[in-house]
Image (tube, rainbow, N blue to C red; front, side, top):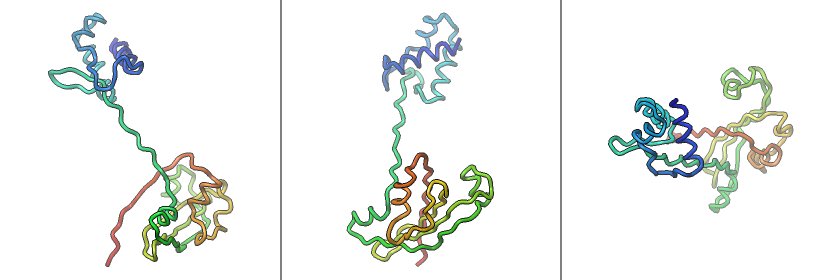
Length: 180
């Protein structure tokens, strides 16, 4: 029966009859409405709280939770950012190769070990100072000309945006202070 109560409260939230920050019906009110024990109502509200749909305030009541704000990930081209600041972008290719995925990389991409991938490591500089170390693994089927690019004239981001628009991304940033 607690699922019915839970669904009732969720329906009110999703239909906007109950808005963010508004108090939901009290346990006492829900007990009377559904003719169930207070323990049953408590379980429904507790589950809604665990799911982040309501916030419980002891002695005051339960309130519709404010939805979490999503922040879309904007992938920007480092060369464009540098130019926008009035700087000069250059890049130095450390490695561009094709080879089989090792165990860790294969697990990261959820692919079988040994699958062939393109790999690049490029240092981006702004006014001759290194500002970004970029490491990429690229599926050869998605970007077959990747290895033939001149990365001093175009960035991997520019090329990949043209030939293989992003569908899913995982962005990992490691900040490191260089030695003196």
